[in-house]
Length: 82
Image (cartoon, rainbow, N blue to C red; front, side, top):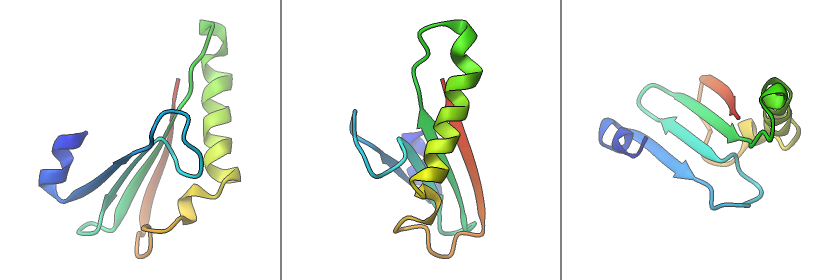
């Protein structure tokens, strides 16, 4: 992901146990797009889908998609990884 910086993407990685921002944020001012990634840990394979949904709900509940630095973004992908 860090090599995306050379292609015009701003890459922000939240510190472990950080609060207030999604875990990984990719923003391209050139294409006016962003990818917000929330990472969750699943203790059992049966919980992967449920935990991913928790990550997406967290992005929405904490309003990460309207955070500072995303002004002018017209295309956004929200991703939860478990």
